[in-house]
Length: 459
Ligand code: FAD
Ligand code: SF4
Ligand code: SF4
Image (cartoon, rainbow, N blue to C red; front, side):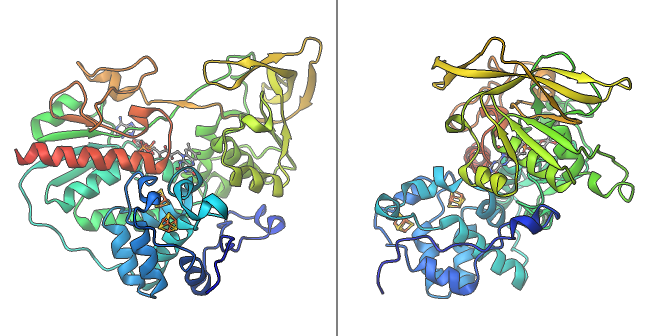
């Protein structure tokens, strides 16, 4: 077979249609697509792609199984390392991870590893996931705080090793950012539910509406459990600190997305959480969270949605794919622009934003060129919703409520490379330790900590 240079395309919903619904944008590979894409893999002996995957999935092995039509075995191979493959196959920034190291990518397009992983996972879901076998109990008990990808992975690996695991989650649904942050049109909640159900069937118990640091402290957990893993994430929104940020109609991206994703605000009054559906929406920031907020606002019925970013397109932190999707859907990019004030009407609802044009100076400590305001370039923009998406910090509750836990300057819990914290029998990982990162990085941290907790419990 001749070498196929390009990655097999994945079908997508048409932009004109998809901006009117919350259904998934990317539709996945058909069987023919998957077989074609699997045939592009060179089966490299030293498999550099595996080194790019934070959970080290045996990529050439699972792709070979897909190529041979052994889909059952392919998903089994993936699940040896990854309990959440349908999620990762959808949201992993593969271009910076496994696919970045793919040998095919040196001359042509890399193999679509994430798309193939999604194909295998979706194939198993369609067929019906078999209940996993439960491992005989070791009698050791572990408490996991937070049910995001870090907590779920740590819990999944520990129950597979026979330990009894209870996950404590403050919200009413488990999944962390997977359920409250990443929108339905990128990651259907049904998929998240199915993969969480798998972790439960492995034997993990999940207690929701249970805030650690309020209902029970980490010290109290240590009285009942042999070890504690903290995976409480980075959900504390940052704000601009400009006048008018407390007006009605100004949301942090976190609140805006949580209302829509988790509380189904777009179905109000059927669901009881409302959200203001703006006609002109400004989203401040240009990372993935900003793109998610902008595209969500569009689906809620906005006529104009702006991404307002103080640097240029080159510096935008969002994935290229997200930026392309946003552009296809008609989001307008106001680059080299920053708001200086938000102005309200007589009822304190947002009506306008004052902005100023910026130019780029020398690189700052982040390595990106520093934006400098251009004097006299102020201009108004009429808006009725402003969403602030300029980053999140670690959730402070558990670090602040836990005596003796060492914390870095920005509120992150300090750990060693295995996730051990300054406290005996307490591990941490994911965004709470690294600051806002990725699903698979959080999973990698959960996995490392689980291995180390197991070692400790086996001593
Ligand atoms: P989280 O997912 O934040 O989970 C932490 C959990 O702990 C939450 O459920 C929280 O409710 C719970 N918790 C907090 N405090 C307590 C407490 N005191 N007691 C009990 N429970 C508590 N990454 C990607 O790889 N791809 C993407 O496409 C992507 N898109 C994103 C889109 C958005 C809108 C956001 C916000 C992030 C996105 N990310 C993406 C980043 C990624 O989701 C995070 O890096 C990842 O979820 C971190 O996992 P975690 O388990 O550390 O924390
Ligand atoms: Fe690549 Fe993510 Fe799958 Fe790992 S989990 S192989 S990084 S897509
Ligand atoms: Fe296949 Fe690329 Fe991995 Fe080589 S580097 S084994 S081509 S996926």
